[in-house]
Image: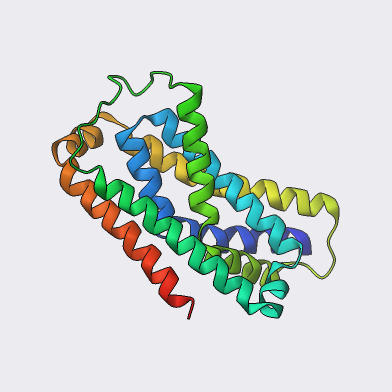
Length: 210
């Protein structure tokens, strides 16, 4: 019973964190609208893989390592912030470029594009070290006094489902006809906003490293 209560507590806390707007949401939204539904879902799976990495790191004592070596956390913040700012700059720079979108949302997308979207989702997820602290803190607060390998595996699988399912829902919702039409009509301004938000979040992360 203690294990179930711990699992429910972790799930509730992580779900609140996942649905909170941030760079991951911006990236998934733009991928789904600008590329395709399949690429958006692939990026969502990448988010889930990133969440699994954070979960494993938390189980292995990442929080203790970052507390013991503060410089490591600073380096991760700076590197992650630079990466987010770089992604934002790429979106901003491409705002005025024309975009071709598949005519039907159900069309299959090339494996290369899906792989790129999956990697983009993963790297965007892991680029924010603050997420690792969230995972470590939530796990520290809700983990049972004793745990088994089966519980850890169940927890990791649950994390993947929470992360990937939420962003998959976002991708499916925003890849429908109306959001795509709106995006094409206002692409220049929407890309400027999305790129600006990503750059601002990256710069904020770098500045917080002090």
